[in-house]
Image 1: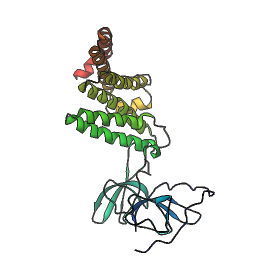
Image 2 (image 1 turned 120 degrees about the horizontal axis):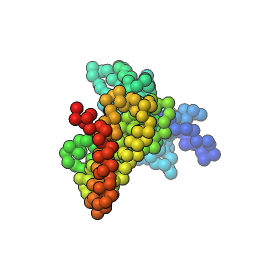
Image 3 (image 1 turned 90 degrees about the horizontal axis):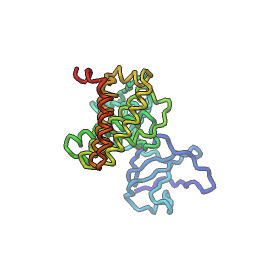
Image 4 (image 1 turned 135 degrees about the vertical axis):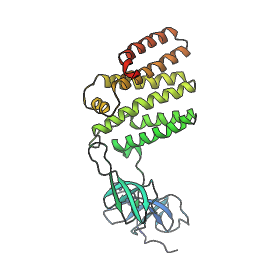
Length: 298
């Protein structure tokens, strides 16, 4: 095997250049690796290898970092598969389909109003890139990830795998709990975030009830109530209006979902011997639900 052209790693005195925004996954002479950085100063690529197949005695490796390869060589991307994050001539996206030598990519780097997704079709194989970490994701990506986990949680719940469902619902909540809204945060994305926080918190609480985890059930249900109370105070504003237009009416938001949260808290109190508190909470839930009773029946 021929060694790649020897390239020196940056010295400790050199200023570290920023990592590549989209890190391509490549097939090297030594195994699969990720192009962490392409140095503008000399064009050298710093590649972190996943599994080094051969001896690291090559001078292209640094003794202290045997999994790092420094080379000017342009290695090819690994072959793309459906579901991979990829880069094509139109930007970054997710590969959705491969058919007749055509690649269908849902572009993440293009944003339209509402929830419209931009899809492109290319004939040149896109480059596979490392998936973003949660810290690297924008708000829209975090919401999309949380939606995916919510869907997986529902499958676990249907299979009566309540521990798996609880973990997935809780993970979905964590993905969007501290979202910092930016230019990618359309009102629709914000509305989706609110729905995820409420429904996944309530569903996680239901899983806890199934697992007799009373304190956790109460915490998740109260988390949903915080979101619902905040939304109730902003009735008529953009997010509330979007939800209503999309069929999530007040009877569902402030009737069904809010009552469900209070019922979980009441059940948790009852199971922990706090009978008086449970009764008070049930009375409150009844009072909140009564204004929407006609809509429940229709």
